[in-house]
Length: 285
Image 1 (cartoon, rainbow, N blue to C red):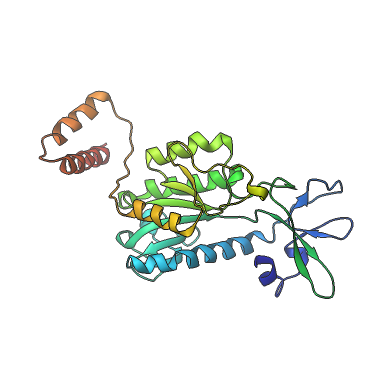
Image 2 (tube, helix red, strand yellow):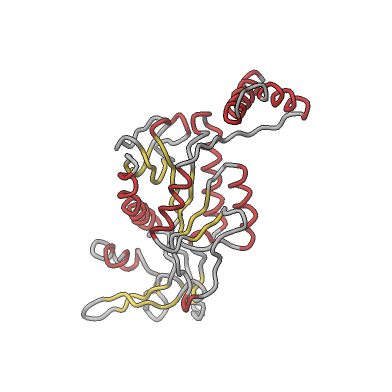
């Protein structure tokens, strides 16, 4: 659908690699031995298409919880600028300019062309499937280190921009598995509260039900195999109050804050008091 839509307005050279035999491919096949080059022109198209896809995917769910799925959300207070907006966010108001308290979920979209495709030029041009990502040269989606690092960096920037971002969950939506080297990293990011999950919404990225990871040990990465599973995970994420905090303090200082917080009556008040004291302590430094 991506190629069919874009080919109505753009030339094949903007969307496909052209081999020495004058054949168009989405990726260089591993069997291809000729000269290669890097195609950058379609990146903006892919970003626009996949962000729209995720917005459409979540629009019904957003309405069910009294929100809107909004693209390119800006909120300078939490580091979402015109140059670096949230790809998609669930918001109380249907505007790109938002206040922190009206943003219920931030979603970064890191989806790619996963499979390889060939443009077969004939009287009626058509797109032919070639193979999964193991058959071509190129790492799509979460399999790219630069993609993962960009997602992590943006999430950290949001977290440290303002305390008003501390209770807004952030998820990264993609359409591939992750590499072995990122399994512990994504679990740590979830445990530390920087990101609430790297979620793939592609249940079958490999041909013939090829083996690929379902989830990591601590659910830093989860593959959603159907729409109901996606909604269940969203509900679990949004129905529980969370608070992000970070810092490095001496054990004596931490003990003093915990001792003060422990004077509160119940568990939640103890937590609220501890976070309040931690922030006040940070601000006084």
